[in-house]
Image (cartoon, rainbow, N blue to C red; front, side):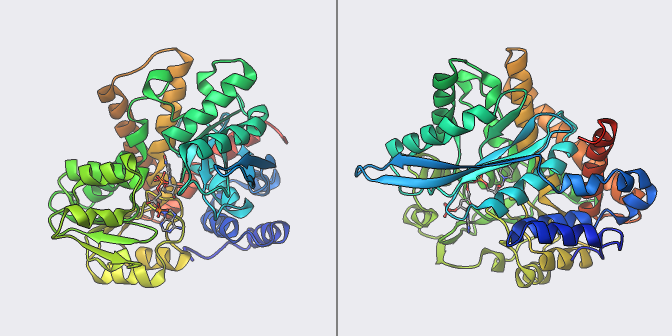
Length: 449
Ligand code: NDP
């Protein structure tokens, strides 16, 4: 637990539990935010009067649909598709699509809920939503992935649009999948509508830096947290879990900022390279050849691959979980602290369990929760929307400079809000309150809708 829940808020949380049975990840995400909001209600009784928290916890719209498709053997397959349009007070629903066999409504709702506050923290006009499917892209041919994406979009297209809901990528959804979905949207609607999806290819409406944005942004956020403590990445040993989009560009930026990443992973195990991870090799294996991280040791004989190993046992000063939810438990957090970790920046969404978060906060290390630290991805998606709206494209340096500024501002807002509410250095409280207040004010202004 990050804090005690205020007694005014306990009944609201109990109602969330009763109305959303079995959705444990959603409960966890709601609880973490609600535990921060007691002092806000004391200061702003109007939020309680107009039931802002109760309304924020209830998605504006939830769409669940069948996704039938034909595999390469000619067999019919059926998956389930989701889009949860959580909150549109600040702008059109915005948030990624996740394709992973673990996906069910509770995962999409936890991600959509977090997205509301994250998007608010970016300072850009975007609401919160999330979607996906229990489809597993692993081991599928390009043709199968294309047919799945086309079937998925054949339902989704009627719910989205540049002023309504703008999906993007997440786990299992990268440039290839966004391309297939954009193609199907265009075909069904007969509209070349760039602003309907983000993460597009660079020659058809995409933005430079979008691919790198979440990882770069997370490293920038940690850099800011380190600066507050008179530290920097320079010479620090770092561990980054995962080896997907977020992990790869987190590693790249850490290396640019002078740190050394010695381990990364996938769901089968982790690699340890004391000389520093060779990122070009990882990119070749993961982005081009779509192989497992294990193959790294075929090329770098001095490195080690630990099957099913726990990456958090590798001693480091900075840890950046960038794979999936609840990947750091209480024991892992304690081990990290014991081994000298001074900063944790979450590239992934909710990668640390409540027990782990408590250990980081009690140890007073710099802990940057995902909704703040990984906001760079969606922020750059919003920059992609801006460029689409004015039919322009900015160069890499300009776009990266904007991302950097946004991350500095997110850090500053969280830092200052934590101080204002009597919890200096606590970015969980800072992020939750700063993200919440903007949405709450907008909802209040718009009446009971
Ligand atoms: P990718 O699909 O590109 O990569 C995911 C990585 O995490 C892979 O290495 C994958 O390994 C590993 N992983 C996934 N599920 C598990 C699991 N259950 N156990 C262990 N490892 C796992 O996804 P992204 O890099 O885009 O996303 C990573 C995280 O960052 C997610 O939490 C996502 O929500 C979050 N995020 C992503 C953003 C983006 O812009 N892409 C924006 C903000 C947050 P394997 O291949 O073995 O499955």
